[in-house]
Amino acid sequence: MQTIPLRKAQTRLIINEFVRSVYNWMAIGLALTGSVAFYVANSESMMRLIFGNQMVFFGLIIGELALVFTISARVQKIKASTATALFVLYAALNGATLSAIFLIYTRTSITSTFFICAATFVACSIYGITTKRDLTSLGGFMAMGLIGIIIASVVNMFIGSYGMHMIISYIGVIVFVGLTAYDTQKLKTMALSQPAGLDAGVVRKGAILGALSLYLDFINLFLMLLRIFGNRD
Image 1: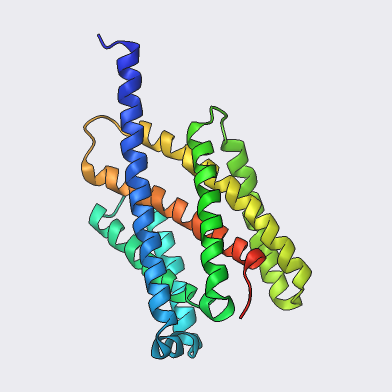
Image 2 (image 1 turned 90 degrees about the horizontal axis):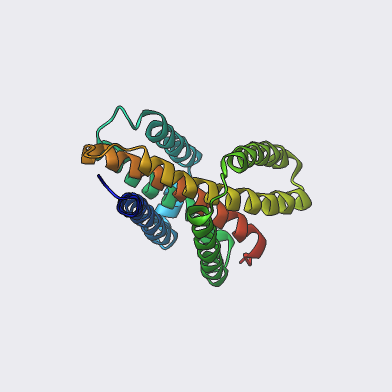
């Protein structure tokens, strides 16, 4: 019969391996997004293709939304290799559209904001993975806040209020800080819900789904911080 310390050690090992896999895939996604964004920003022909043609730009946005929906809603029905390919494709497309930040903000402020975002993200992740407090209610509250941000952003597209723009940005930082902690804690639940001896492909799909959640948290937190700290060209 297994002793309690041995079971705890095995539980920690399962959680650590799964979390490591999630963060590895998230890092791959972020690295690909950054590389594509930098390449597109330094290619005049690519910038003209994407931002000089509204059909191409909105086609990319629609494609990104479709990929996020497919991965989130159908991850259990598709192969692990397909889920991985869709995540990589999404990260690349997101990089192409995010290249616009190089037209708006100075590269120095983009770099400094990235490090601020990374430090904030790491702190929230550590809190989420180590706290004994159940963050489920926090996640629900932050999800409501996210809906509010989306609605307010759409309204502000017509109003064009700088004050509302900044309020949305500050609230957005709070929302994505909370979601980062919540989504990180959720990784422990995902890891422990996987039976022993589970197929590696199923584990990979869980890791891709977790990586997508944290990737979206990081990107959105970065964009909100960039609105606050970014210096415009």
